[in-house]
Length: 206
Image 1 (spheres, rainbow, N blue to C red):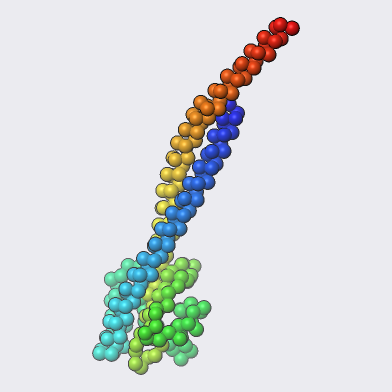
Image 2: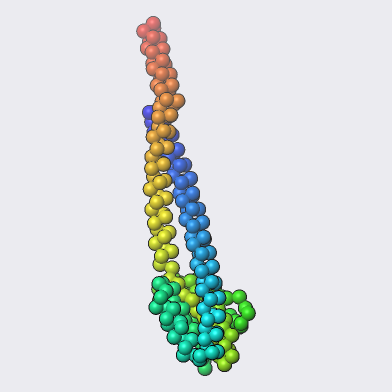
């Protein structure tokens, strides 16, 4: 029966490896779709709010445009929107340093700049949309969304995958053990028993 146990253990290792790879690929695929959804949502928000901010700024002034964004932030959950106006020293210091050069080159009509960044120990997805503001060139609309819910989503999916994989591995291991006993264990036991009887008979005749 040692051979059966060893065979079952090897098969379990193979099953666990396959399930682990499948779970990892499933999580990767889900996170990719999740990230793509965030990108699309930001683009939609950016298009809508950039048009509203530009129109409000032109028609009613800068302060009204900022009030519009404050009102939007009061309604939105998780997503934070703000207007970034270049100061005397260039781009606002809260903007990630590694993209300030790219942001300074962003002009109305350009595609929004999107990236992942870590601010204050928190991962965020950021989108910068250039605004056509006549007296404030270089002004952009920033859309920031924390990615803590992404980690929670991945952890929940991982727990479900591990639970499913564990149940499936146990079931496969049990089936492998039964098959091993029938196809390997019993035939070998019969051969060993016959060999013992044969050697016992030989010993008796000597």
